[in-house]
Length: 154
Image (cartoon, rainbow, N blue to C red; front, side, top):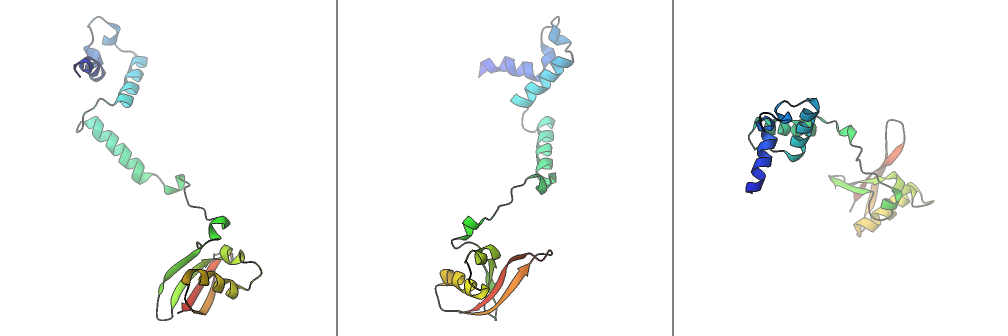
């Protein structure tokens, strides 16, 4: 530990070198190297103004960076829908149980009518007798079918 003290002092105060040496009057390149060395090895103590500045920069990056810069939205593919996924139980009201079913899952059922495909999909999930009260199409503003809102009475 005592061996690192001279190196640490040289990082913190480069002008403390010998009075006649070249380090006493650093040029532009020496300043750039000093900034890079200090940025990599970070010799500053907690509570120093440098530490506070870097914490502020990190927090600004976290809270001010637009989410659109990070294209990490999950993609749902047909391979994911072949099992039990693609069905979301929204909740229960007086009318019955509400489900949202992805249109791609319904389309993957083949030549079945929409109501029959929805029944087959829900039978795999519910495992109890039920009746379908309504099936409504859910579309986006461009009239593309996204899925179906289904109300089921158990």
